[in-house]
Image 1 (cartoon, rainbow, N blue to C red):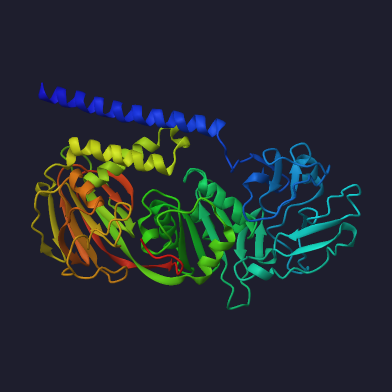
Image 2 (image 1 turned 45 degrees about the horizontal axis):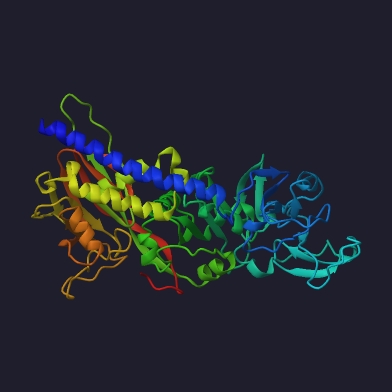
Length: 521
């Protein structure tokens, strides 16, 4: 009878959470349909051009008059190419795609490479467009970012482009070797200052902000340098990635870990990784000075400047080997190997992350936002305070050895192994509430900090700075023998883990970029 009541309580709890989610999502749908939206994706792509509403443009100039018919375009109906900045109305964009090519991603090595001039309007003060061909216009090179004011008939289209402003981070089209429509290799420039910038973002995450990142950088760089990992796996980029480059990852901790794991697969590439925070926690971004979240206005030029002035920062990498135990009448599952950069945990915090992960896969979650994410975590965390699930009395099911020495565990609902001084969206868990008596925590000292959490209420108090965790030790190797099943997470990616022996050991370092403009939170 008691078990039946517990099941019914659980059903009511999830019904309440579902109702709150549904109410907020309905509000988001109505707001997205009837509210102001400054970033509108136009799903049109013809003859190399990638069209969007001109209201989307943040970093490139564009013409408010249609290049074909010369009519004034309203923001919501005007289109511009996010790669070359060409403008056209919805009526003419098909015709212009046949006449004017977009900027090329590759170019014959035996031919000079010219400017890609695009008409971006009439100079301010000259509103006469009676004779479109003879009037003075403003032209923009979508490679070197130069502008030129002259009549169209006097424009020199055979002038060699030197990429001027961003020549050290652009992959020039003559360097791109293409075979059968696929990029095979990049011929490096003989310039010690050349360090191309590669952008990775997931168009399907970040409440459309990642989509904006992809758009604004296509106009500044070679479009091949801007990778949408929702359609192009980052592993496929490794075959042509330059041996020395800088990488910008637009996403949360999980996306950053995905890219770092991908770079681990190749030994010939030295890539320093910067972060544009688009997730919910963004713990690694906070530590490296990139902030807790990106601003409401994204400026590609300022982002590039920040990356240019960033310093390289080694970051410890940890190999996590999970050896499942043989269950009665069951087959033995193969070992699983993961890599951690932020933290790994077993228990109630991983359970909340797992609940959130399941909630975000629902159909209506496409209308979610960072605000909804925080609300979801708050509600799910409060629910786990009432029902800890399989996390109760975790200390009875864990046997932990740190550098070979057994740890005595108090009553716990979570065990956390930290690599960075940020957990749970900005909590400095290791140093929280101490008077300076604990050892220093470092990103590259080859040690993990092992802490414990007693309950979801304990997590809430830690978030408010009103409590301290159980601080156990620092260790270079951690072995966890776990009985039963419990939620587990690595860098924010959760799952339900069965009985297993879990070994966490040092596995080298990754190269990150630390911002010089912002202080870490």
